[in-house]
Image (cartoon, rainbow, N blue to C red; front, top):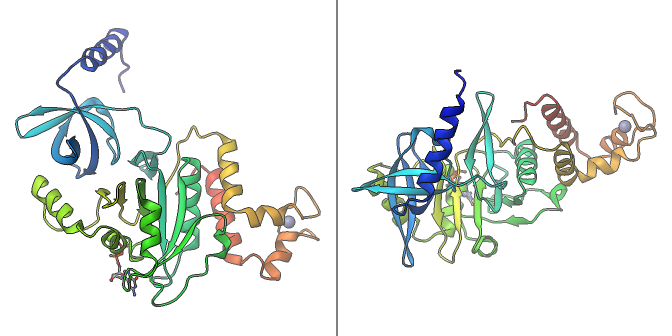
Length: 318
Ligand SMILES: Nc1nc2c(ncn2[C@@H]2O[C@H](COP(=O)(O)OP(=O)(O)O)[C@@H](O)[C@H]2O)c(=O)[nH]1
Ligand SMILES: [Mg+2]
Ligand SMILES: [Zn+2]
């Protein structure tokens, strides 16, 4: 890659200053990214207007939830600026890089259920990423009509049991999301889109509006989309992303803290091993092995912990 010369650098700075003084720019929020076009919304009185945008090529990546500034060009608009992305951004790993997929997220709802079978390791990975990003996480056990999911190991997080089929538990989730910027994640088929429909009675209208603005057809969740909740707040629907990553420059302490928050039971056991450098494999008086033997820690939870710890050490998280 050619290096940027001092002169080019100066020109970039000058451009930034000039553009920051422009008075034709309008504040907007990114609500969907379709690859070839970005959909933003602009406050118009007490309503939101959706506008389809192009963007300046030198902006860098654009993610849902980004605060941007646009300039109108007839029906179309161009994104001229992206505000510095805050800490509460979720990333996914793509081609060995972190790609921001949603920013300004206040809380995540991790949806799970008993069918398709719950991947607890995925919940753990979502929780770690959310914790590192400083985002509150709650777990939603959907499909309570077909069976209750045991989430007792996650007792330090808010837990909701619900059924989008019969409406059980939806009201509490609605309350939890009020006036917040929430992102919904979870493996495919757990009922994320169904939950959003249950929370937003006029969802069809909002989807229609997006389709009309973008000339796009049906609603399939192949990309993130941000919707408004009827009682205030927003919710981002996501495709079944395998997990979220976190920035490479994340402080080691922050990662350790997140591990403690997500795996308190494991760390409690480790503290009781006789040897402080116990590898929990062949040592005598290993409290982890004991806990697994007597069922206080399930083998799969221990595996999840180890796989995440290893992934973090190998810098291959998600
Ligand atoms: N039994 C039952 N099925 C549900 C419930 N919620 C969603 N489903 C079904 O689960 C499937 C996947 O739902 P969807 O919302 O598309 O999941 P997503 O992939 O997470 O967005 C659909 O066939 C839904 O009808 C529920 O509460 N109970
Ligand atoms: Mg979906
Ligand atoms: Zn041990």
